[in-house]
Length: 303
Length: 322
Image (tube, rainbow over all chains, first blue to last red; front, side):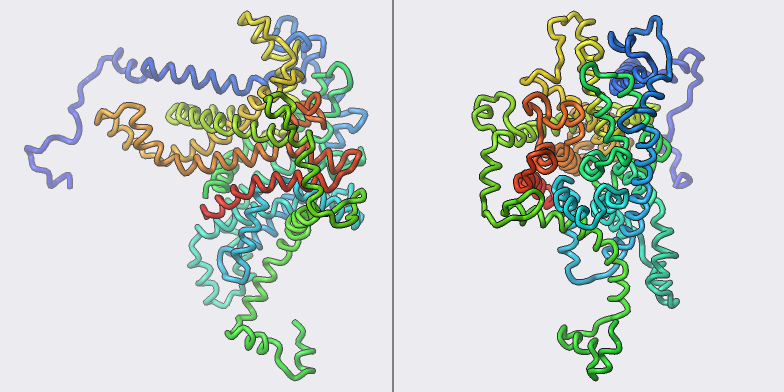
């Protein structure tokens, strides 16, 4: 349509004038209100992490320096003492509790991904009796607090001998997590065109083959989101381990942190080192897989 | 499928079922649906829905330790709702802490949800068109990926009378008189904790608002600006209609988050939720009733069901959005 323009029509672009160097620089720099916005934004973002900076400082400095304020930097001593103390903590050493946390978290995530995808597939593609009811039950559990299932699960695990075992806690996490995973993956599958599945169906592929070779691979991004969010949730969980893990050699890392407070003077260095060790895994995972985490968080609740 | 029994009786079971239903059943499809659904739904039933029903039913029974001892009707409910740890009517009317876990949990919700929602929207708008917004957002969101038990301990550290930076800050700006152990003062401790909760949840609402803002066409805002629309008018006419649906989600998720608060309070104030339960919440009282001596299973179930009753309208709203 550029060519169709008549000569007397106004030009699309303003005439280019040659700018001197100073003007060019001025245009490239943010204007004063914009610069002020940058300053406020950076200031607020830094303010938001100040408590974590404090935690990091406390974990690397001796208690005698932290006690009067970690922000005093003169004569700062850096030490790994707190980390060794945390890894060697007498009630339950972090070297053990971190491994326990991983032992519970990894299977909880894998199983919930597979079973969640399997349940989500018929929810998104087929009609079956009670579908609406089941769907609403899943939503209720998603909104319900975890305390609600603690008493029943406590009795179930006691009766089956799974109380105070890794497997028991894994089952509780899987049963609890499956609700939101199904809702999330169902929404994702509903947004995925089913022409490919139809074509495979006509070619004689079974529903199981379609699930394995089409649905699962195409859900990969959503499955990664599920994995990251579920991993963070299970790793960070505090209430379920508190209820179901009672032997100190089975304690999970988040569970042990309040015990590090001690009786009289809180040993901030020990608490901080233990906290940093525990939060390092989910925080690093978030930073590396931020895209999936963010997308999942937004999709999980906003769809 | 029980093929042998069908042949021995001479009647085809599948045909009988189809006769009962009045239409033909695609048995292959039915089998596939069951294979997909059963493993997941079995675990869901055993470890989520079943225990939930158990709490609903159990709240009407007396318990001997962890075992059902007999039907008592509404007795657990009456006892729980008159328990000062759940609702302390005298203190509630005088607005003095401890008011009981239920009013405290609701107060937390009333303060926390609007604050974290507005702050999240504010930060999302502030960061929206800045360079390096991803780093800024990551910094603000960091707290939300951190274990909540660590958040509780961090708050304890921040508010510590000597080692805490909050009191250090008060000293620097010359408000020496305000320096105190914020989390052990009965009448102010809960506000200090709520501020900590807002600190964490703002990252979440900012994230949701940011993704909603990303879908706004910058050209639209630019042309509105050229047409002479001020910042307030631009917000009201262009930004707000687009972020409004997200607000509903942010508010609901905020309420669910507050309803589930446990680790922050436990880490900061132990199982009692601060001195004399001054910032105890419902989740903590469930834990205390069910898993601390003396065990009161019925009461624990009632308190957990109070949480569910608060959560049900939220679930209904989510279901309606679908």
